[in-house]
Length: 126
Image (cartoon, rainbow, N blue to C red; front, side, top):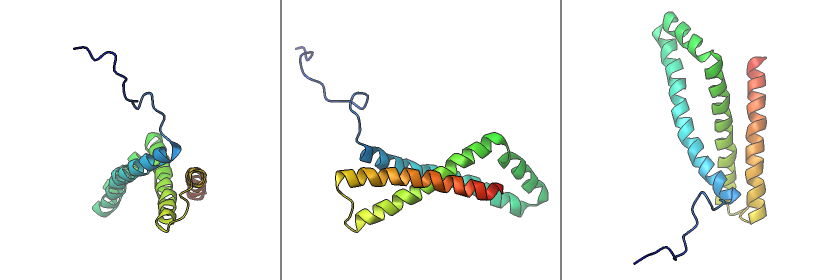
């Protein structure tokens, strides 16, 4: 018996996820990335407690350009998770479920995360 004539269900490669679904998935992924990035913070604190040589080594590693770029991305993830968490709190209060409102609040969460990331890094640099 051949099943070639049966229609196939849409697959993720064919089906385009709605924007709100993408922001929901991104929120979960950002939580995981924050957990992983927190290990870097723990390493820095432990190095500071371990003495001057350990701290210098940690400062050299964390001050390198590739790690700084990762920290910039981690900062964006932190602020995205924060802004999207506030969005979820508003939803928990029963507001913002209309499709256009949910899409707009997702865009605001991404934009807010970008602005907050730039402000944080500008403050850190100067």
